[in-house]
Amino acid sequence: MRTAVLSGKGGTGKTLLAVNLAAVAKTATYIDCDVEEPNGHLFFKPEDVQEEEVVVKIPQVDKERCNGCRKCVEFCNFNALAYAKELIAFEEICHSCGGCVMVCPEKALTEKERVIGKIQKGTAGHVRIYTGILNTGEPSGVPIIKKLLAEENPEANKRVFIDCPPGSACIVMESIKDADYCILVAEPTLFGVHNLNMVYELVQLLKRPFGVVLNKCLEGENPAKEFCLERNIKILGRIPFDQELGRLNSNARIAAGESEEYAALFADILEAVRREVRHETVADS
Amino acid sequence: MKIAIPVDEKTLESNVCAFFGRTPYFLIYDIETKESIFLDNGAVASTGGAGIKAAQTIVDHNVSVLLTPRCGENAAAVLKAAEIKIYKTTSPSVKDNIEAFTVGKLPLLDEIHAGFHKRGGR
View: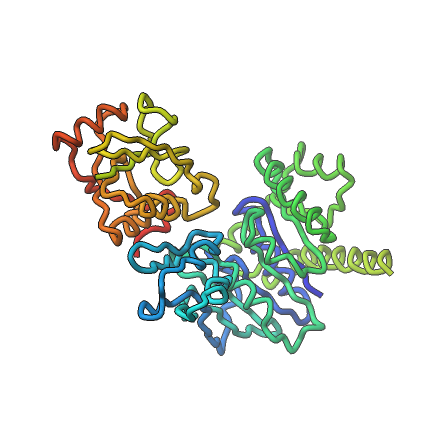
């Protein structure tokens, strides 16, 4: 069972929720797909961390063999190749489709590997922690997420929580592509609603079952709640705007492990997700 | 000798386009014969690598010199491989720049920016 936690903007509480849900689940795998700023590991402080590089394939030119036919230049949809007296490959523009190697009639192109980041795997108590790390300046973290989510997971039948990157671009689509359920985290502001709407459209586009967790809730008006009620969107739970919770979280403490009250708060949300998923499964069958 | 200039419109009365990679047209002008042709820039709708594709167009038309207000690193790499010299335009008018170039009054473009998508330069 894979549950993805996402939001249209940063700072809404994706990591807070994903980390605490993993902590209150009996056994869980927490996968940090926020590869540009992965910080879930700061909460778990995993041990026995194993590291593996993530590479992409890029073309390597054999200038002796290249006869300047330019079939590869015409083929490349991303303009990563140019021919000016010799073939020039722009490594950072390349999307690693491998097409240029296939179309070259002279076998002048081969693939070489370029490191774009790494993944780390470790353990903290009953939680497995997978972290994706994209090297600074790299244009796309998608290959790292693909590798993270394809990792052999011996505890696949147990709970997997995917902490997504913010926004609704390719990298988020890759993160939720195979999720069984999506939790959208929302803030009670007009900005929050605007960004909630983005991920709301995304999960509908990808036909993922979803519900909303309202974070930073205060007494009174909550535009994110209004948004959900108007559209008949399932509200899975609400996390109060709470100074103590904020303090724990900003010190990279897992709130659910610090008090009964917080453990119950996140266990209730987890139970709401379980009910929804059961409901989905029944509705599908 | 042929020179290339990114232009806003398909006329010699046009202004120089502020962008190289995503200019709508290129003027290819022959200094000796005073012949001019206008090319559609196929790179204008590229999702990425527009500068590279635009530079490829310039290279393919056997141009010796490019006059442009600015140029990104990737495009500059392609132009450099083809030994095309890049000069900086100093006024909006295409005609004024051609004139300034022919009397040797245009400076070489020495500021190559890192590209608008920060993907240039390695």
